[in-house]
Length: 165
Image (cartoon, rainbow, N blue to C red):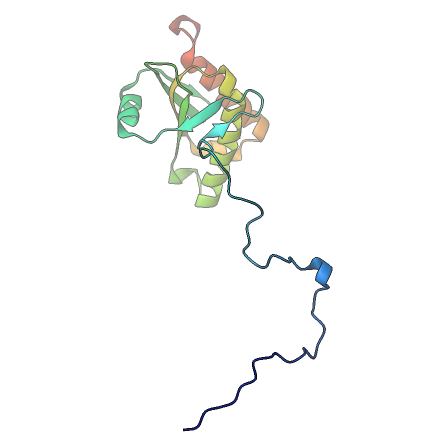
């Protein structure tokens, strides 16, 4: 077999580029927008824009076990909120129990996002501790205003002294 003689210079392109050069990113594809961020990573949680207060997710089994045993539970319409006070000052932790009876995954995820929005607005008023929000199927058909009022009532009632509920 013989060797092929391949020129090292590229030939001129026969066509104009599809995009004008002013619209093409000179840095090329996949180049980051800037230098990597310095310092510690951003905290994972739902931050309340008004107060800077954060609502954290519940991740440990012990907290879920304490929530299951808790007697501080309030039901307002299709929402049940269970509360366990924190032993030391910390941001409130919130978990959501949205079963398949509520609807398909799209419906459950939309409801969870709406609940997160309501809870992030309530964050400055929440007592430190862990909250579990249980949801009945009727919650999926509520307007945002109704959802907001019922969830707010439940959150505030669960932490109220026993004489006021």
